[in-house]
Image (cartoon, rainbow, N blue to C red; front, side, top):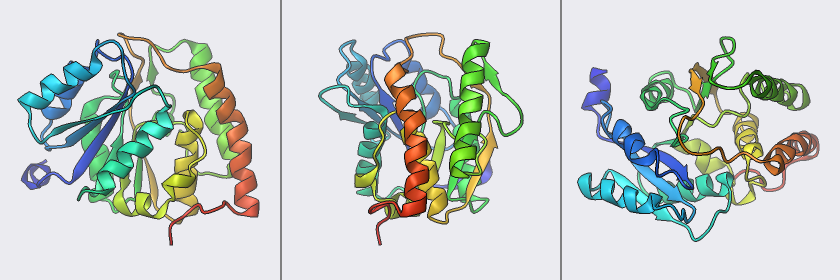
Length: 253
């Protein structure tokens, strides 16, 4: 941890939000209290519950470390992250994190993903629920099984060597995001998570899974829908098709 403490911040934590007033203040405070001075970008899709106002309050208390990118309406998880990546790539960050604002991902694990990329020469670190078994808390068994076998389905169809293909807790190094053509990312829900991992792997980048414990939210409501699930099912088949016949403009050269 001494190495982390000595470094200036080169890492941006991107947090997409929609109606997260129950969690956002405590969540941002937790990240700000970590030993490494991560900077945070909240990408909010026009939350009507006052989420943005709470973020601005934290911004005033921690100038320069918390940023807000407000959007007019709910446009999907994938587009929120892409907007965050593009915002960060215009600046000097070298590490870009995806994390949920509902504490399902433990903010302390940001340090482990950061270390995996910075110290272990990894290009994409994935906070994995399934690399060492099944590490999920407070989910009904039906949802655990659906998530677990969804990753197996992705492995079978695409060949992607990742145990947790739908994981949403990740760290990308800058070269990964610079190479992937973000304008050609096709999916916006959970299929977005699969597509980004798949393109990073196909692009020759080193991918590492870091075991985490996933704990379902206790406050607020889940944003998952049937449409998102259907997109993921069919999206995997499209990714395999693209892998065989070539993904149009998949990378920047």
